Image (cartoon, rainbow, N blue to C red; front, top):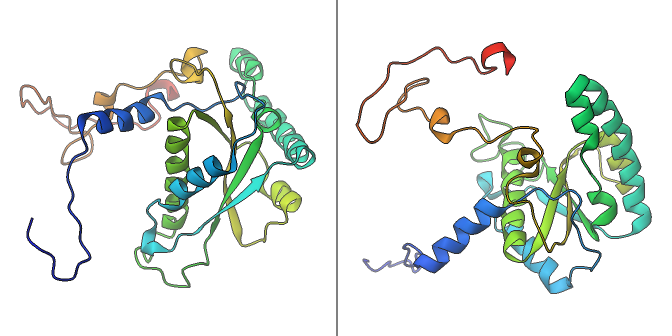
Length: 249
């Protein structure tokens, strides 16, 4: 590596095989935990490490639009759970037949069982009216906040901490409970707690809700619908791809 006169650059390179394996293991075994939380509280140094991991996420224009609102009190979590329950009942009625029955069978008890909840928010005004990198895509601040959520989630997996992302609620209800200003957007309600077991595969796959799509069906090259067979180099012609799939499946 050539010397850097500014002193701002450091050496970069691949991780060791063991380090790489650990990163991929965290990614591949991460799960959305709904009901397997243990009651044991998370130590403060551990929480600090998880928040630091989240805060090290990339953000457009380095605006760092996130805040992390920690909720431990049972009374507050119960109020949020009631808001979730109202929205969850509305969601259940959106499905019909077997799908509704399967939806109602899912145990979604994270808000009550996990000893810690974190409300992750996005302050879309933090970088000012014009933000580098957000000039043509105003959603980039929200996407940045989602990167913080993913960082926290993977760090939690490495620490033996389960995370569940709750998204079924009316935002204004939760804002009122927590006193969140109007201009702040709630991106995620995360339930965190130690776990001693996880589903071998994503819970919704294990319970037959939906299966993981084959990766090869999701990769195009050089243009929409162009698939390349990587072993032979054969390129298939573009096909008409309906995002809803056949029969809306």
